[in-house]
Length: 161
Image 1: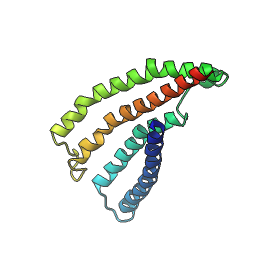
Image 2: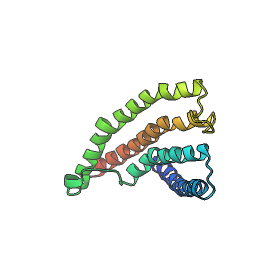
Image 3: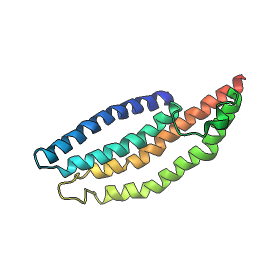
């Protein structure tokens, strides 16, 4: 179930990537052909880019496409890989997700409390900025959940061998 959640979010962020390219094209055409621009549209590209990378992290981990020093891992037996994955989740991934969530909490809460809008005239209005900053909480949550799925898969591998 956790894997399916990561896959669904990853596929949605892939479509967002296409939308981001289209919006970037519109921004460029508006600026260089019509000598006009919309600040909120330009800002939305930056936020979409952040969303794709931060929310796509869980999908990347699920698909095993994340950055890994693969010199030793690829030659290990499935049982040893399961141990590396299990310990990596417990020692590195979950503590990092907890730390990121803890550090982001106040930052996001203040944004909601202040009803933050873009600093730029014509930029993104409230509630889009706090909503987008909430991605800082969504990323460690989804990544942590995918870490739990990896942990469970590793336990299953260790129990069956």
